[in-house]
Image (cartoon, rainbow over all chains, first blue to last red; front, top):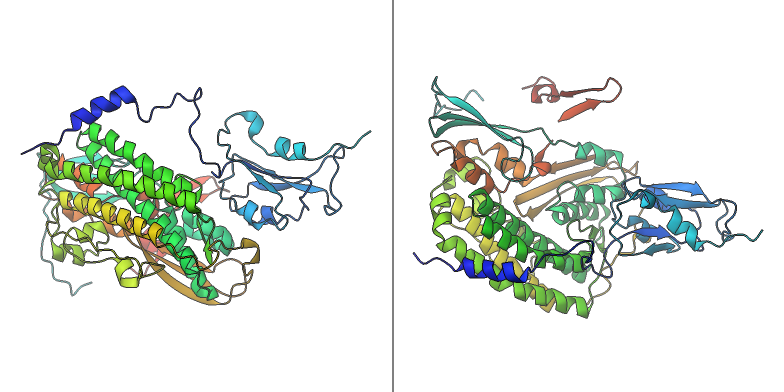
Length: 132
Length: 402
């Protein structure tokens, strides 16, 4: 019985390393519209809580915006969605149901590390600070 | 059950060894225990023990809203998430009486066929690994990356698609993406043909798979086997061809069957289906209709569900998958969601296949069924107040009627 030539392929792959990536020195190639980290833009958010209600993973809690930040007049209750990325399943239901399209989407996927577990720093960075 | 004649009595010899295969990944990395009784090297009896991975998905669906359940259904199984979501979403569409446009239907089929290709490639690779042919495993997994990339381009994620929504899909593709998907599929096709040839001609695979775990046509039908397992025994069963749901009525494809019925035939059915799926995907990308926007505006979906029930089925990678969804019209949550997965049929009824073969054949036969344990697990109760875990027997569940 004739056997297919697998060895030639193997040797070629050993030499060329077709799928080896030197992570983290070299990043994995990711699509521009990959469903990565998302957060609310506080200049648009109205604090309506629809994303928190619809989230299938209960990853979003509506949190009061600290007093030192400016909020648009539409956000009467001064609330914003705080996403727990440890719980988030990145289905983008929040992005799609938002009535004012307040969510900013990125293709960031490397979320390991204690400082990035919640979306506060990203969301609060979009809001202006009140001048003293 | 008293009128059923006993045709075969399996006598377990006194001197048998009871060998547990599993529950730590007997074939795929999923928990299932095969309690194998062996007389020497020969298997005389197998008990299939499940229940290591039950998550209470059906109850979870009843506790969440209809739309949240779309994502929960997608997480029943990682490998067949798009088909699970599609089946559930079509049930919701039946209750709501809405139909997605043709472009959305084509895109749904595209996502499901991508999933079929990568699932079949995965199980063929795992089969190669289980028989000790690790080089082939690595080679197939290398080329599987192409289809994972295609899925990322189409749905936005490599594995969990989250692509289906009542009334349409959640993302569209443009011309650039269409060309990239076409390129990836055209690159993949010769590779799959090559691996199929390896499975046909390689001596190692031939000796390990041929004539192992043979299932007769009558056994396949009497044990209600579904999917490629049944099709490898000559049973022409395929929901895509019989139901013609979504765009399957408009896309030409063949139902692959073989008559051998052994482990090798089951793997070959999967290779042929992979090639068939690649052709279907190329057809879809060529003939993608432009009859409107397939992306549904999720802000305008109906919030109230009328009372009603729906029963839908899809052909998942492992066979027929069915969803029953019931709405009582009062609450925002479904009254009942019942899932029946193909692995449940195939694995629970698989004990007869191992008998008479040697112990070394057990993993081969088990892998050839393409087990998906997370799909099929259905009852462990965890009482958080008392901090205890206990199992509920079938008799208790049926209220003592059996």
